[in-house]
Length: 186
Image (cartoon, rainbow, N blue to C red; front, side, top):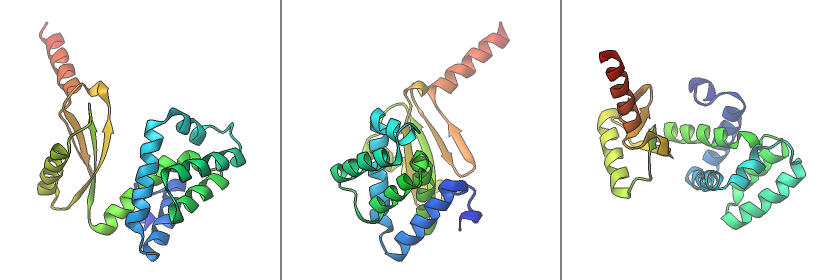
């Protein structure tokens, strides 16, 4: 399966594929995805956790002890917790964000969904997220899972990447276009 999808390749693709196959066999794909989403959100919110995950300075043992406390606090257990422990023991915790991204792609493919990467300046309301999902479903003909990233530097609007298509309606891009048009005119 990993060879068919270019987004699931390399070390992260192999780990994600192994986790996906295990979760599928145990009929717990949704539970594992929810756990990984929770861990990914914690990673996005905590500079200390990012440092723990990415820094080679921490020993596997130190990472393992810290991870055990984090997993207990977050209520992540079962396959997901064991998987994160395996990544830590194998000194691959630095790749966890890529593994989660690849796992999401495998889940989306399994469920017949498309995955869209959406960048916004600030968090969208549930109503706006639903409207975006509906619009993307109309375009793609599939249910669409959203990977939303908040990037205040785009100022406003949004950037949507669905498969090979990308729509950039960010205010930053529009302002840059106006700036270039003004330079050419002057």
